[in-house]
Amino acid sequence: MKIIGEKINGTRKRVARAIAERDAEFIKDLASRQAEAGSTWLDVNAGTHPDKEPEDLIWLIENIQSVVDTPLCLDSANPEALKVAIKAVDKTPMINSISGEPERLEKILPLVAEHGCEVIALAMDEKKIPETYEKRIEVIEKVMEAVHAAGVEDDKVYVDPLAMTIATANQSAVIACETISAVHGAYPEVHFTMGLSNISFGLPSRKQINRGLLILAMQAGLDSAIMDPLDKDLQAAIVTTEMLLGRDEYCMNYLRASRKGLFE
Ligand code: THG
Image 1 (cartoon, rainbow, N blue to C red):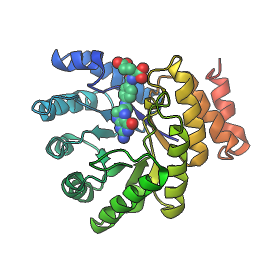
Image 2 (image 1 turned 90 degrees about the horizontal axis):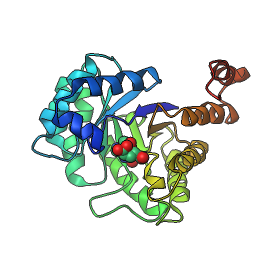
Image 3 (image 1 turned 90 degrees about the vertical axis):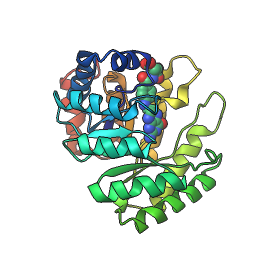
Image 4 (image 1 turned 60 degrees about the horizontal axis):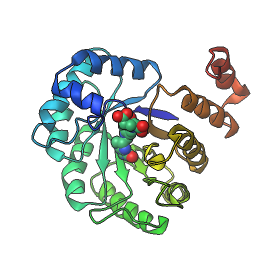
């Protein structure tokens, strides 16, 4: 299971303040702690000021790279901001994200192909997030056609099935898992990821719900998640589920995690 550390996100109030005040220490601390906790990528989202986004992204990237060498996951729907950010990174980044929206495919896929990036593909288009897994798969088929036309390999693609808030969409975890299973069947080389926290919006004890979704989705084929790497219970759920899915020979990782106190 590969972890995309979610904490450097300008839509979070504390991070928005750090960006506005150019509080580099706050950002560096988030970067170091998430890298130490085992993140394969660090998500970098500069927030929702389109005019300031490229400048803010560069400031974030430079500060993060001054303390860690973990590759970054550039979280923006804006092709112009992505173009500038790709030039500022030391290591090939993951791009978060494309979708079935033609403009994003046309403008972002060439960048992905040129730089050899991994890319997250959302199972939605410019109209909306489809309500059934059959319709989400139709969107992903369209995205994969464009991916192939751009010369990007299937194993660079991370499909995000989009798990909506369960409080208002009773079947949303089921639909997300069905989407993963079906896409996995059709495109065996494609990877999966998702933001775990949308599912629990508006309900109490959110971490409990996020953790349950993680386990169900891993069973369906999820092999990466945009998540809080500092959440020990979530990390424990990953180690345990990997073992239960038969991916931990002699239970070595589980035993190592136990000795290190992950389950205390
Ligand atoms: N899919 C993809 N990218 C994404 C998302 C997704 N990027 C953004 C988001 N969703 C995932 N990132 C975060 C980052 C931080 C938080 C949640 C998701 C977070 N949330 C706190 C919580 O859930 O309690 C509240 C906010 C706060 O702490 O200020 O921290 O789905 N491809």
